[in-house]
Length: 242
Ligand SMILES: [Zn+2]
Ligand SMILES: [Zn+2]
Image 1 (cartoon, helix red, strand yellow):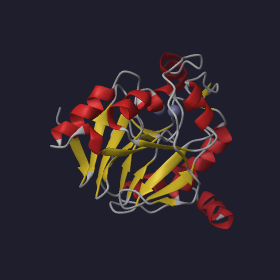
Image 2 (cartoon, protein in one colour; image 1 turned 120 degrees about the vertical axis):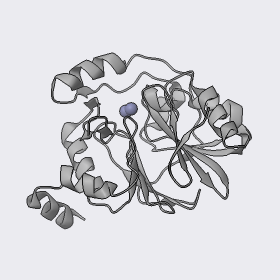
Image 3 (cartoon, helix red, strand yellow; image 1 turned 135 degrees about the vertical axis):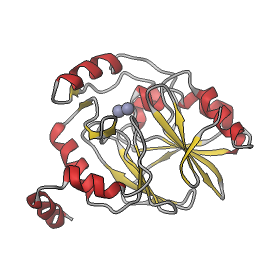
Image 4 (cartoon, protein in one colour; image 1 turned 90 degrees about the vertical axis):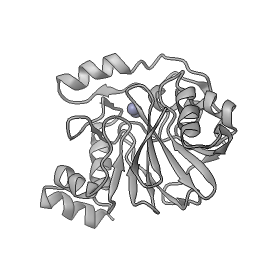
């Protein structure tokens, strides 16, 4: 299967209404997220499509422990030996394979419909061992450097990743880009989720990838600012909170 580049060095891998991203580095490939269960072969084919073998996948960074982001993680590790990374708050969920923390659907009818359709807290997955806990604020020294940003709200252990070499933000499920920037299907804590959306809008980046919806190749941080930091009061609050 041919995967499409978003920007140079980053390929989007469709994992069944969820996205994973394959990043090329001098230290082999890094995968951000592992999609729904049963999708590991999509990742292996994507790597082969780039003329390499699956054992070239060295790192698997998981943005949070939801079934559509860790579903194929165990299978991917079995097929590649990749080292796994996740925020400490979500590690016990990934390592037990569920159940998952409950979420409240996002405001609006669509949130309620999608949340009931896609999120089942009682779901059980193949457990995956996490090799390395992520520390918010650190820059992971893989693929040229990923800055780790803690963005709770949708999920307590959620991180976004800013890939320095390509100035690309991996926004996880802080927001989606299905019909423009919008809410994820649900929140564990709506207020924290709003703070995390504004936190990402305060950063500077060129490209953005999402757990769900289309990636943005350029001027992405302008779109985040227009959506989440429109109100000068918000920008002011962010500055004073920084
Ligand atoms: Zn999620
Ligand atoms: Zn998701």
